Length: 392
Image (cartoon, rainbow, N blue to C red; front, side, top):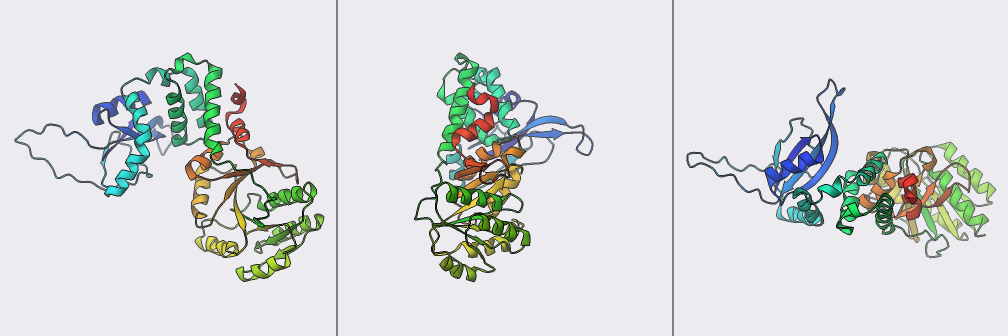
């Protein structure tokens, strides 16, 4: 496989260069906005970096008097970006056969679309003013390039000629595509399921795990008239234990404080009369691998359970991605997003669901207990991302 990087002013420029250099069988691996020139990162000109590839590059004719250089293939990680500022620097790739076949499979669905783009068949659709509005809106919401590409691919594949659609029809179609992407990960939480008695809540510090637990437990007690119990292993912060104890007292619910994984067995025995048990964990530095292993010991109990990863929408997606990667050693069942009221950017929800294959559970939007929490339904998330365009 031959991979080449371009730094261009616009996507049409990139497509023309790709077609000329790599041919009509090329595909685009990645795009991102970059800045070139300037002084110490300032006053740089905005450009688009495009990484394209072709399975087999057709060699240029070589004169008989000229000898070919050996074919060198340094390894390239597809997830890494080239940071050199020289445009059009060729990069050649060597992978073992399995990795290359996997990459080809991942790109198979995109091939047809890009072939048509390279042939100019989508030039009219891609220049559609409403489609450009969609692109801007999704980027404002910090939806990742790969997700935008998938939305565009589905939109173009659904209609042969987007020019026939009016603005309302296109926004309606985009909303439907986002709903389809979210529905694959949507399975409403059923706290009345007696097969699941223990719910763990993990995540970095400051995301609101304790308050979220109080909201769910309050609803469970006040609305469903069921009994709850609490366990906390967050003994690193005295205030966290006191906060959960306050909620436990209000709900007349027992609280167990555990200092080690060995304490869990006895704590669960003392709470055996509760319909459901909510467990709070310490929100220490998620980059600490020892901390993640420590949490895993608390979660490894012979009790039917689910684990919620609690993430704040005030964090950048790159940070959320790092958090998810570091918690990947845990058996995460669902993701719960907090602080929807403290931001106007919600693309991280769609990024997480589509790129990380996580299951949606809840959204929280304030500190009020138990009011400020709601199921993260696909309709709710789509409305947050598209804003006023959700009902266009």
